Image 1 (cartoon, one colour):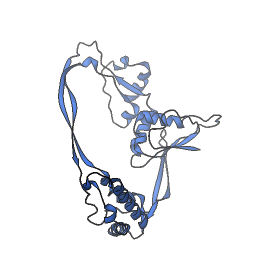
Image 2: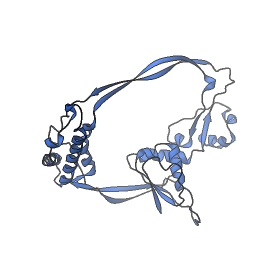
Image 3: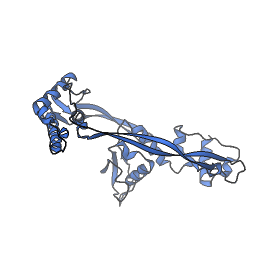
Image 4: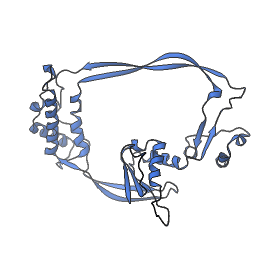
Length: 300
């Protein structure tokens, strides 16, 4: 059983493995389009060479924070061929012209140079949310086609760091910034953060942060470690840039209603109430043969 771990849309083409049974999207953006989902699912829906017996089952793992959206997209992909289309008759006498302004978007950017050192960690601590080293979780599975639902409980052991480890990383981050700026032509651009924040002071900041968070474990989960490093994140920024987009009318264009694009809706969109079907008498006769059966189902 070979899993796919999807972190970015890099497995969407040029890759052919026929014994995939588990798909693990590491980030939401790896599953944020119907086309990409179709491509990724296609990797897992291929029967392995020489397969015998029942059809293999593909399992898609995802985070509960966005599993609902992925489920809707997966459902829509499974029903992508079951669609109804609506189009305008270009020869109709009821078409008319619309006048519309075509706008262009102009970028107005202003940059403010940063001179000297940032005022850093003046409060002597970093705000930390409550952390849990070992987390009880419930894993849920649902069959995309039948809706059958199962679940089981387990524990997740989060990666943790010592206070000394995090203090060392903070100090090395500051030291590297000083090293980058030591040859700056303008003396004001040369920083001396490492001298102001030696390892001992960085460690004191970490301890004070944990004390304020009510944590006495002496260990720091990776999410909170990142918070300490993010508190130093602006130090590499040489200047601040402010961008404002302004819309300005470009031209007056004419559009005819007979040029409207074809619109469609899928079975998944109708099922979850995202779209509705309104139809006049005789509508079924105008549909393609492959859509007529689905149209009759929507009337039930």
